[in-house]
Image: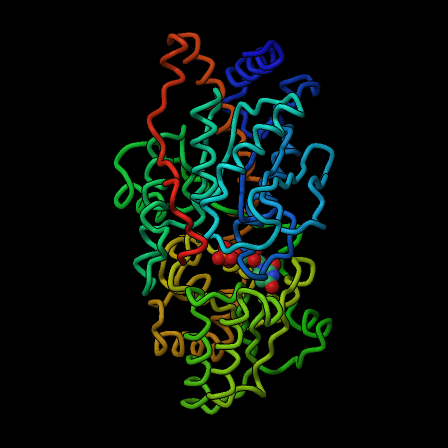
Length: 474
Ligand code: UDP
């Protein structure tokens, strides 16, 4: 351990001993505001600095960016590492004095779907190590996101004395139960998802449902810490429906059903469109369906978008359906607030940020009864839960929410309270910060108690088969 690291580690140890239970103490205060502890968040395919809602950019990108910025406010020096996908992208983006995105070259400078990225990971590991050497930094703690980054984290842990924390964002064992065709990379992913649970200091489950799935489907071994996702309560908050509609130029009286998210078959947009059709057919009522998110037609999510547009046409819903495209977080609160209901019809959803964003804005949510949505949406209190792909179930739920004004008023209030009391990024960052400090403190204890050779031992990590090119064969 170099002397700078040693000083910082010692500061962390004493800070942790003193303040382990003082949740909101900024770490910079413990370090006298001088030596910020550097930490690396790795999110290879989820760039924290891109437009969210397009192609594969969704909840993971939001999580890393929000957590990164909030951790910097708590006193950490936060570097968020991702893969550079275009020559024009800046390699370093400074978001705030102590938080930046760093784009490393790993593979061609172009978008590559996540299922085809595995072969470029060794290059990412090397680029990360070169960056560390150039900056003269050794990250004592690395927090990886999604299984691709987990592999990188496991390689780094084998070579450096660092503490490793992981958030899954999606779990192969659960996801593959909901898809017709497993990608070629499936077995590798499942192996790495098990290794990261067994070999990291801890994994972070974002809902009790995820924690249970990890324990029952992935491994009996390894530590699991439950820290949910959050939302930015300064941005997503209650706005009156008439005011939001006025600002967006929407009819103050019509019923509005909203979907927000990526265009991906597992998001279940088809179920929503079919349920809207059935609602119209059986009740004769008029409504507007807004489907927000997605890129231009020539991008990777264009195929699903075209499929949904064709379905809308086929069912004769073109007139009442509106596709506003990708919306930024600046404008999204108005859309949520203008809607009578937000529908999250996913086949599988590890957490589902959209549900809490809508509820924070006081909009009831109808969601599939899966994953983290079972944790965030309280049926009959903040919205309704329906079995995934159950068109009749979604139709009935839409009918109930759009026709019972008094009950809906109650849902709106309860929804916003549920989020403000339980799901803020600021609180998530405090809990992660406490976790990091505890793990760093324990690592110093271990180093003192154990012979160095033992504290560095980790078992073998899934290797990249030299002849496998996931890209070409998929
Ligand atoms: N989102 C956005 N603009 C859009 C569509 C989606 O900013 O046009 C954001 C949305 O607000 C949320 C994230 O994308 O923060 C989606 O996260 P979620 O966890 O719901 O789904 P994921 O994309 O991770 O499957």
